[in-house]
Figure (tube, rainbow, N blue to C red):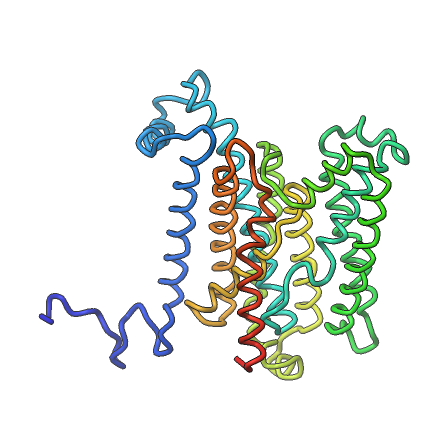
Length: 367
């Protein structure tokens, strides 16, 4: 190889974009994940029952950025893109980012690669509250749908997720602080209770209510609106900003709580903040999309495979990869069974379950 074609290397002889372990350097890894998310978003923008050619899509975007034409008064393709598809795509971005970020926080907090945001019952609490609103809301709270309209379901789901978080956090308190093991056991109990409640509500629901309940439980971006995108986006962005402060504490907690305290890490405050950020992110996303499983499990593992376990990379990288996964999965859900639409949660489970089993096998082997 000539000198002009030589790969840039560090003084230790490794390529400048790789580490000795074979993983990518943080800046390279985050740049690659950002590029993947952007390309996935561009590809998904052209997919759907009403297909838009890539050239037409790029022309529309170019006109919008240059200010030559706006969404109003545009052709049919442009109206479909600006008013229907773009809100859905952006909701997929913020939903995937929130779930990926929450998954990275949970795995760092529990120091377990099998941890998931649903482990402590946040998703189950949101699902139970939403099911109650769908099935019994008109009987027990007749003024709720009238006063809040379509926001009643989203607000009840968010309140259910946050309520479960408060209960679990209180149950995990001991004289020595917050016990992560007790939090896990409380989450298992809450999940079982929520499953029983969902079973009862499914049993007493009408055919229409049961269909609405099942559609919500399987997850979808089909109800996206600009107001929803803004609200969920603001919450997820706030969670991402706060989560940056948790990167160093989570790195220290990987050594154990005692070692983290010796390093000057405020362990109790960090654990409390991680739980609150996870609850906010998962509650906001679930209230808008229903339950989308396995993104919080898959995304952090993908980042660790290419960049290592440093949470300064894992947290933002999981948000980027989670966004790419949800947007890509939603594009497939809109196209594989046209003119119908596959539930998004079903599609993510098809990908997440095999990966979960693979991770379980690696974990059993002590890796």
